[in-house]
Image (tube, rainbow over all chains, first blue to last red):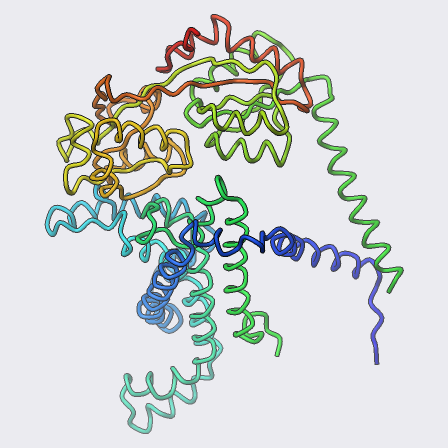
Amino acid sequence: MRRRLPLPFLVLAGIGAAFVVLPLVALVVRVPWGSAREALSGIGASTALRLSLEVSLAATAISVLIGVPLAWILARVAFPGRALLRALVVLPIVLPPVVGGIGLLQALGRRGIVGRWLYDAFGIQLTFTTAGAIIATTFVAMPLVILATEGGLRGLDDRYERAAAALGGSPWYVMRRVTLPMIGPQLAAGAVLTWARALGEFGATITFAGNLAGRTQTLPLAVYQARELDPGGAVLLSLVLVFLSLIVLIALRGRVTGAA
Amino acid sequence: MKKAIGVVSLALLLMTAACSNNSSTSSAGSTSTINVFAAASLTDAFTKIGDDYQAANAGTKVIFNFGSSTDLATSIGSEGTADVFASASGAAMDTVQSAPGVSDRQNFATNSLVIITPPDNPANIQSIKDLGNPGVKLVLAADSVPVGDYAREALKNAGVSNAAMKNVVSNESDDAATVAKVTSGDADAAIVYTSDVAAATGNQVHSVPIEDQYQVIATYPIAVVTGGANATGASSFVAYVMGSAGQTTLRTFGFGPPPTS
């Protein structure tokens, strides 16, 4: 049976859809297809794409490595200040990335509170390096995998884990063989979202790591620099990012949106 | 379904009408506004000039949009909301002059280049030639930005272009971002405008002069943008910048007088 929807509701939904879709359509319409090849090579698109993949994948791996244990603690261990810590670790989602970049400079820059020591003791400078770009990107993207994993753990029926423990499974064994497989889908969705966010990271990276082709200039930074002298190339490169992100979301097959 | 589409388009129409209505009342109200698009390097000087101008012309509001001149020139072409354009390069002004067009174009200031380093000068930069020394972490504005272009020209003049380009660790989006990389202490050196050093407060940076024979002088043009909403206000603001009050302020902020030709 077809349900009838109230008309004003349809109207608002239509405006909502048009609002999101219009800029994307405009990108497709305005792409200089004829000169696409020259435009992309002129702004070093392949270098930026390769670097973007490296940086975003590394940031995702680090996010999973340190974010999942953190989510675990937040979900399972009661300790004073847990609510505050939970708020702090997801803060980068709502923070302007440039603020994150400035914070990272104060912490890990050559004169930062930790970075000063890294530089003086080991001669390590993170700013202006690919490692710096990975750190900035991780800072911004990691909260997504933390949120997803913590949500999965909280929604878990802990009887399975208790049963496994009662049958003699060590905590590490229970974690690996029972808990992780059960929250696998949420963890995977969180990791993919983290990767998508990492791919689009701009503000923290340019503020903390700078902008140099082949070293710190990821796709979004290349788009930003190209927009001045080569707006057509910027449009083209934007479209590359749109499609990469779209593929990620489609690959998640509704896990993010909740649809089947 | 057809009806729904009709209502949607009507609603969109109403929304856009309401929005455009809003903006036109604000510019045609009792207070007149002058939209000035100006090079990022002019931020401090023009903010002061704007305050002085508003004080001298009650009921007029000067709204600034500061950014890289190249970037501003592009957005003037596509948005058409500027009354006045003050550029750090003739090339960016040429872009606006060809479309949408300008009138009353004249040079109003010059700016020279200077090397800045962190206060302790970690790479021991004494001359522009030292920027080619191995291992110097050099930050420049991107070559699409006027100051980045001028800086590359100066390095070429000094004959250290190749070596210095290998030392570049970041291409920044404007001179303010370039200065920030030095004040944070992460870059060893940068080439920016003399006016940027006047703007950087206190002793956050150490400046090293560029020898006269390698120096590049930037000439700043200003003009009334054709098709702006407030042509009268625009001409009056341009006249104010060219006048003694405007010129005195520019001098205070490290700008040189316009070339006499």
